[in-house]
Image (cartoon, rainbow, N blue to C red; front, side):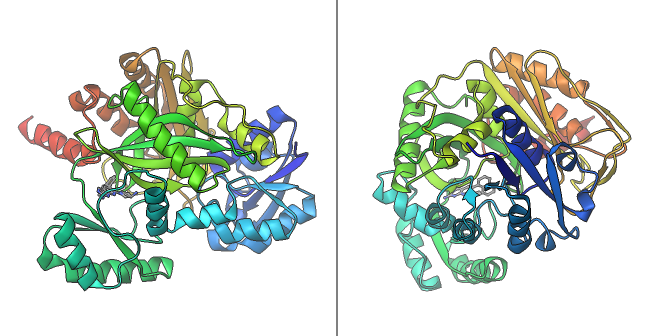
Length: 453
Ligand code: MV4
C-alpha cells in the first residue's frame, strides 16, 4: 500500500479522500490555491503545498505545479478526485513518466472513453445497446442529414469531445440540420478545440440511470448497481437515488452485465461509471462513460455498505478487487446536492457561512468541507455539501431526507436546501415518476400552483 499520496483537488472530495487515507494509514499531501488557505482539506492533510493563485488554470489545473508538489513532498501517487484533472489522459500519462502513481483508470482508457464517438463504437463492438446513429464522427452537415433521415427525427447532435451535456443540439426536422450542425461544431471547436460531431436518435423522456463499475489490474471487473440521476437542471444533477424504482432484478442484471462488458472492452481499472438512457418501454442504451469517482458515489456506498474511495486506493496499489458483482442493495438511499446558490434564480451565492448546524441521527451522512465562519470562495464549484440519507425503503428515505433538510441550518449564504424540500414534497417525485424532463415539468407545475394560489 502507498505510504503517502497527494490529493489534486479541494472541497468535500479532498476531505473524503483524506478520510479514506487515514483509515488505511496513508499520509496525505493537500495542494491548494491562495483562495483555499483556510480550507479544511489543508487543515486535515498531513502536509500542504500552496500551488498558486485562485484561478484554477494557475493552481488546481496546473500539471507542472501539482507534480512539483508531489516531488517536493515525496508523495508516491496522486488522487485527482472529480473535476479538475480527473479525466485528463495527458496528466495521467505524465505521472507515469515521472514515476508517480495515478489513482484512476489507465490513460488509454481515459482517452478512449473521453472521445464520446469512439466510446459509442467500443460499446457497439462489446455488444452493448446504443441508440441508432453514427458509427463515428460525421464528415459534414450533409452526412448528418442523410443519417437523420434514416433514423428519423428528432435526433441529437453531440460533440465527440463533449460530455455532460456540453455542445449538444436537438434537431426536430431536416430544415434545421444544416444550421444546428454548424453551430454545434463551432461550439465544440471553441470549447474543446475539436469540432467533431456525432449523431443519435433523440429520446424525448428517458430516465438517466448510471452503473457504478470497478476494475483491478488483475482483470477483474464488477458492477455495483445503479444510481437514478434523472433529477438534474442544465446537466447539473440535483438529487440522486438508489435503487431506481424503474429497475427490477432482471433489468438490473442485464444493464449491469452491459456495463461490465463495456468496461472490460475498455480494459477498465479503478472506479468508473457507465451512463445509460432508459426508455419508457424498458429499453436501455449506452450514453457515455465517466472515468472518475463521481460526486454521487456515496449513494452506492450507503446502499451497499462499502467504501469506494478506499477501494480506489487499494486497487491502484495493485491489490485484488474486494467486491463481487451484483451486491444486493439494502434499503434506499437519496443524495441531495446542497449548492451555495439562490434557490429561485440559481445564481451563485458565495460568502461567509455565519451559522451551520448539520443534521444527524439514523441513516444520515453529510459530506462537506463547510464549517461555521467558513468563507465560500467565488472561484470554484458552488456545491458546498452533500446530504446522503438511507431508509429501509424509498418512503422512509424520503421522509428522513425531509427531516434532515429541516434540521440543515445554514445562514449567511443562500442554498438549494429549500428547493430540495419542494422536490421531496412533489407528488410525481413521491410516486417515482422521473425522467430527464422532471425539473422542467416541476417548475411549470409550481409556477402554475403559484398563480392559482
Ligand atoms: C441524450 C438524450 C436523449 N437522447 N441522447 C445529456 C447529457 C449527456 N450525457 C447526454 N445527454 C442526453 N443525451 C439521446 N440520444 C438525453 C440527454 C439528456 C438531456 C438532454 C437534454 C436536456 C436535458 C437532459 C438531461 C439528461 C439527459
